[in-house]
Structures are given as C-alpha cells and as structure tokens.
Image 1 (cartoon, one colour):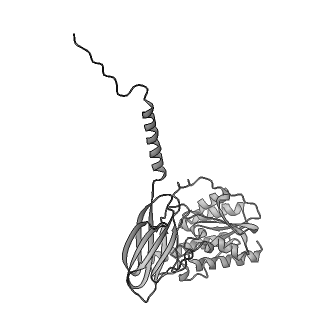
Image 2 (image 1 turned 120 degrees about the horizontal axis):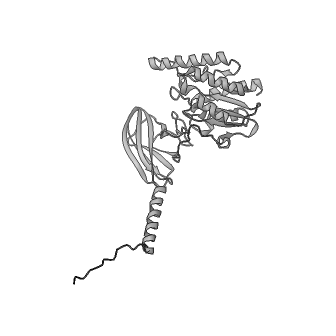
Image 3 (image 1 turned 45 degrees about the vertical axis):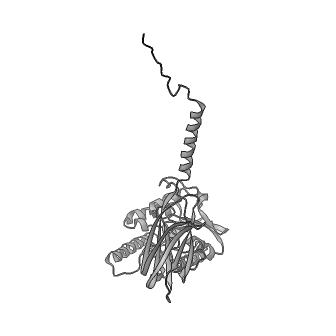
Length: 344
C-alpha cells in the first residue's frame, strides 16, 4: 500500500495577518514614493559678457545642496541649460555665478527662465542687467540669484472655467478695471512683480483696483471665452490686449472683438505690438502683418482702439513679441492718459 503524502498549500485561503500587514505597508510605501517624486525642470540661464571670460555656474538648493555645476567661457550672449530633478520641498533654488578670473568689464546675468510649459507662462528674470528680486545682476565676483520653481500642476483644460476670484488684484480703490489678455497682459519680459502691466496701471491710477487676467499663449478667442465667464457689469472698464497669438487669422480677431464690444462697450482695445523694424525679411513681414491687423482693428473700433506702440523704441523690447520694464511703463502711461481723459 502506497502512502499518499498531502502537501499543505503555503498560502491558506485566508491569508494570515502578517501578509495583510506586508501588503498594506507596500501600498503605503509606493504611495509615499509617488507623493515625493521629483519633477524634472529645465532651467535656462543667459549670460552676457563684453569680453571673453571663464565663469562657473552652480544651481544650489537653500540648504546648499549642489544640483548642477558647469564652467563656460562667456563671450557675447551665452546660454546654458540645466535639467534638474526637484522634489516638492525644493521649490526655491539659488543660481550662483562666479568669475574664475579677473576682469575690468561687467558681466551680466541677463535672464533666468524656468521651463516654458506652465499655463501662467512663468518666466523669471527676463531682463537685461536689471535687478531681480532685490539682487544685483551685475556680476563682479560672485552673485546669488534666488529663483522660485513653480509647483507642477495639471494644465487647465481650454474650456474649463476659471474662478474670477483666482485672478490677482492690484490696488483696492475705486471701481475695478479688468485687464484681460495674453502674455503681454501678463507682463512676460518684466523684471519684477511691480513692473507687470496691471501693477503699473494700479500705481498710475492712484491705487485703483486692477484685476490681472493675462494668460500666456492664449488667442483672442480664448481670451474672449474667459471674459464671457467673468462677472462684468456695464460700468466696469475692460482692457483687452490680445491677438498676437493668432494675428494671421485677422477675421477671427475682428469677429472676437465684435462679439466683445456688442456685449461690453466699455472696453479699451490695446494694439497688438509689432516687432521693431529689422533687416531680417521674416521679421519685417511679421511687422507688416501685425500692422495690417492693427489697421483693421482701428477701422472697425475707432472709439475703443489705443495704439500703444508709437512710443516704443528698440530698447523697449525684450524679444520681438514681449517688452521690457521700460516698454510696459510706456504702454501704461498712454493707457492711463486715456482712462483719465475719458473719466472711465
């Protein structure tokens, strides 16, 4: 008679408590890892030197942990790119620029840009040798520039409404002015929060409340959609500065403005900023196309249109699309004169 050996399964049908605890711990650890996973950010740094010079550039956390380091010979305009992984707790870093040799000429840290994909178009330090967050960007031996890394958030769906209370406000006096637009209305190219168009307008109007509703990358149609979601009454002054991102669709821009004026006549339309005159054929064509669009806007809305590009000089441009602090200030000076003259 053959003995039959019965093998007891290793895992019974009802798992013991130790396996349940192990499984729960595994899930917890995986969840914790996901929460603290680092985001990858692309940081671009532009340097400008009047003569060839070797410098070192470091990216540090606030606790002086080195994220990246590179030495580069700066001659004219030089750009460095760093891809760094940052956890949510590392939202503030420091860019350190140090000279490795002696020089009698100034070296400018002309721009620090963090990513380019955020819906608010955050770009930091887009200035030419101007102060950034209280730091002197003229490098004489060692300069530390604080940079705030925005927390990565899911992009807002194009058709998703925005809470009107989420827009930043400057000033608190009088009837509010609502400033809608694209990256120009958001002040891309300015060096400080106080030099954003909405902030400058609040200052120029004696502390009047200004709602800053500029979002980079939006077309005139997308800006119009946000305006239609915003609670406006007939007495609210609306400033509209958009059309640069769909300037080739002239008919669509005009139709968007017709729809806007039909429902809200108390609107000032700022001209789309053309690039400065250039020998470059493509840039010159761009300038002609935008001037053509502005001509169509003023023909259709002569009582609402304000040409803000007349006083701009080449030095007022940060790039062919955006302005520097001086450029934004000139725009707001013209806008303030019109608002005051018409007693809006």
